[in-house]
Image: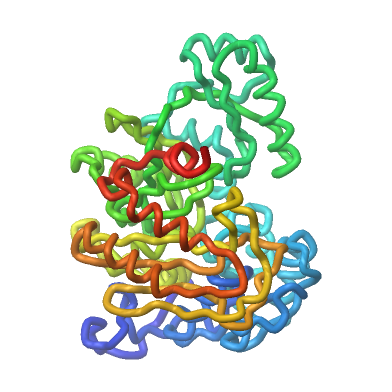
Length: 474
């Protein structure tokens, strides 16, 4: 969709200029439905309100009465608390969009955000999907297909099978060729599901069967492939923006190595102790990957980095990421507004040379979990909540005093982000902000984050993906 000019004022002279996009344009979008909940729904509502776009929110019975819903122009219940009967119910979401008379849907992250069928249904209903095309989403959503695309784009890929594993003999042959240990990975889904490590022949077949069964149960697709297991890697990803006019830029990288059970807990940008030549090569590889996919909108290209700073492609997330704020802080680009403007047909108003890194940003995911008991979920009533502030502190959250954390969804209740000139200052700022953040009535990951910020490995910037299990869960 295109936009037309209402004002000739230069964007730079108008407060709140949209990340370089021309402020003063009247978008063709009058109303957008947000097919999500919680923190990301509120984040999108705020961006739309600043852009003069009305919003339609959806909610389940489990989220009925949530305060952030009052900030939307309309809100519709789409079903019971269970996600499968509400937020994942495509017909209910589309019905809300049609009743709400919207021109576009923003899926946020999770739920239907990477569902190519939902994307296609939106298109068939003449509702813009704020994200990539269904074709690009489907291709990149299949990890095996994405690996083939990476090879075509001359992006380094972890050594492994060229395709899906068909039988046990083939698996054993590949494992011996690349050498144990090997990693068995589901071609669909994410979040650590459908992944197993096999150290030798004795456990290889069992690992394949377990990974396949878990993937089948979680994603309805039990197909798996094999790749070399990189021991103690770093997880580094590159944020991409691509418009519908063929322009693709990166917003530098984020380090997401502090994670447990393959789920991220802390993210930062730029990645510490990453040589500049590795950083630049990785970012350029991510741009090549997205260009070859004929992709538009926001994407994240994820890599693992070994102890010699060799990087290897692992997957593309065809959506906005939970950790997008750290990239926003170090570049000054509002990624949510950019997504909307790209979907509306606007070309990127900046080139790669215009995007520079400024300072260091760190994000801590504040989850309703008990880190003292293996991160056990801790739903319940927040009896009291005090949010930190001050220079360089941002807290993205839908939670508040009196909010009931439901047991039905992801346990994240907020994201604490700091931005400072140096990494040392960012860590100090995060520690101060964590001390100020008070959430009474439930357990949270705040004590865990405080411990990480003071650990010598983190302070020195030498964290890998096994850091949490090795240091805090043994």
